[in-house]
Length: 104
Image (cartoon, rainbow, N blue to C red; front, side):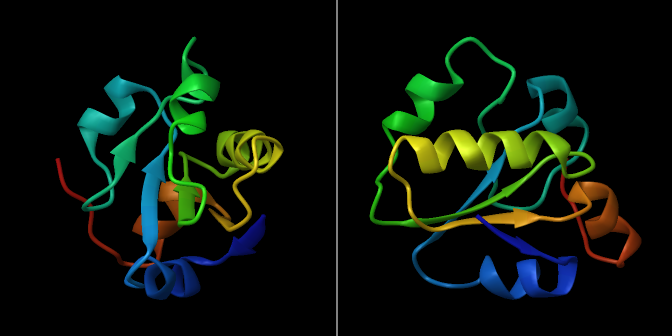
């Protein structure tokens, strides 16, 4: 896992083979999220099974609210064999504080 600040994370998610994952709850995701993010709740019963089905050859940019759950999610993803995982340090809170947009 590589930790990135909001500016570097914003650049990373524009790369071709990077998939954006929001690992917050469905309710949090529906309040607002980064455009094009997929929602995989790290605290949900099926998180490990869901991420196990992902293409391990791709890179994944992961975020949550403050950066704590995304670290846990990134560790799980690395344990199942996903090599390229990027974590947004500070989560969506840092993303918004840095002036970046979210969608509902």
